[in-house]
Length: 160
Image (cartoon, rainbow, N blue to C red):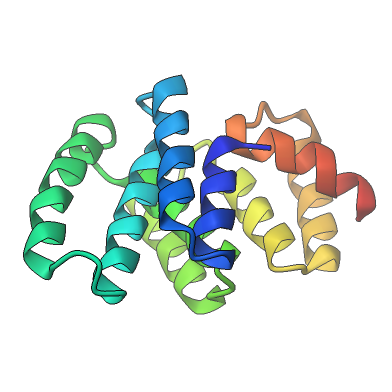
């Protein structure tokens, strides 16, 4: 299982902020350029603030550090929006997922990962018919998938 995806599981389904943070930290230790772990850290801060575990001031201070790391690694925020789209999808927030996806698409419609992320979103939303049609029409079976999508593809596309 992708370590970032494990973080989402603990955050969204178990409300286990501590373990989610550990998973995002593991992802960061494996690859400090993985934008998904920074999105994860941001979402943990959001949850901690909503649950009144940290103050808004604490969240804002920590968010500055996270944002600086994102800006350094993804200046146009393409991958940030794609990773945020996946986070919304896992949390079953389809509207926000597509909004974030479209933000990334508007920044760079030629981003090599757009189709792969679109397929990942369709699969997480459980729309297997659209996912299969999209997979076939875009010839993604020959695409070299980024770390997160490769695992999901191996596990889910075979069941479509």
